[in-house]
Structures are given as C-alpha cells and as structure tokens.
Image 1: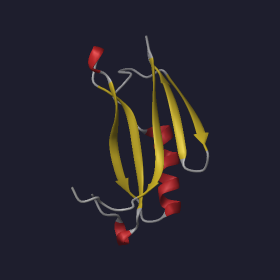
Image 2: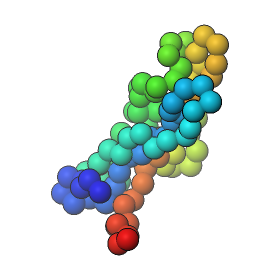
Image 3: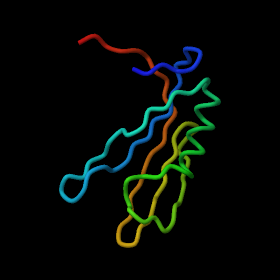
Image 4: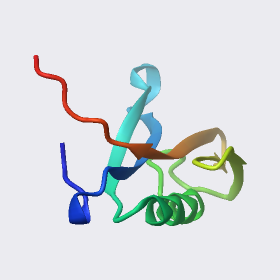
Length: 98
C-alpha cells in the first residue's frame, strides 16, 4: 500500500467505469495519499469537479453530488451515453497478510 505524507492514514479513492463494450467494469482507478483528513476532503471535493474519467470520451456536462461528508458522485454526460464516477475519502486501516 502506498504511504501518505507524514504517515497519515488518509487517502482519496476514485472509482469509475473502465473497459469498453461488453468488457466494461467498475474499477478503483486512483488511490491518492493525503496529508490529513482535511486535505483528503479538499482533494476529493476538487477531484469530483476536475477528474478526467475514461468514459465518456467527449464529456459535455458534469453534475456533482455530495453524499455525506466524505463522498462525491459526478454524473458525466457524453454525446451518446452518461457515466458516473465516485470520489471518496478513506482511512487506511492496514494490509491483511495472505
């Protein structure tokens, strides 16, 4: 697992649609470290408005919704289809030995 600056346990996660055609799937595509909880919230908020998702290819409009204090969903409308992405603040609890 990547480490945060100053060993902070806070991260920002981005989930979005990846693949194409029948191979589309929901994936965790970004795990970004944050220096604090407040920094993670700021980064997540900003990413909900600025992150460039893989789909749609040509975005025409974006609507951003906040769900609670730590999660944002962006609905991105393209020329023919709409996709969404989720940006969340997460606290890393550790790795589990396998």
